[in-house]
Image (cartoon, rainbow, N blue to C red):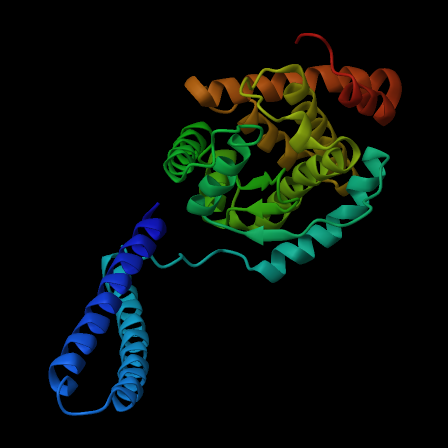
Length: 313
């Protein structure tokens, strides 16, 4: 919206400037040369005046563009410096590489392409969730609508899980980590900073399961237009991620840490309300369904439920 306004203003100013320059040149030319030179000389002089007018016009356009950039820069709110994160992009990539074999083993699936991991802050998560909320929404191309979706997504996320540090992007195929939430997560789970790498690896395991689900079934298409957190498909994909997160922890000897993380997600460690309670209900219900499937038929039984979810949960 703002860019379109700037372009329209620049176009109007440019056209007005060109007309003014051309009229001034022609009037000045006629007044000065009307009675002093021949018609041929006047024609040559008119071409010169026209050329000079175009040059002046082009220089004016450049000047207007520079003024616009300066005004936009002056009007833009200053960006807050990103806080120092407790771990680096290199750390996150190394942790993900180390956890992928365990995820593939317990899930019974292999990655055709490994997802990438990216460190983000809450502003970037808000933009990501706004994009996902707009999936399947034909009326969400308006800039104001997208901005409102972004604000709504950020507010909902902050209310739901202020200590969540992982998110799989169903539209981008990337895994996002929020390092600024790691201290809050460790505090809520009753863990110290020496457990940070294990917590991140289990978080990555959970999100890698979503990446495998996306590879197998196409999450963006199947979640398009879905707004109810307790929709059966949403419940089973979160349930599978919870169950396989626990299986990875068993493989790595991290069961105690995983139990504390699961208690947070399921609302057992700290009772929740509103959006947070609804998400906790999703994790609990999905985990119960998928744990039963795992006990009855192993990992393949869970994949069958992903393909064909129950009619209700």
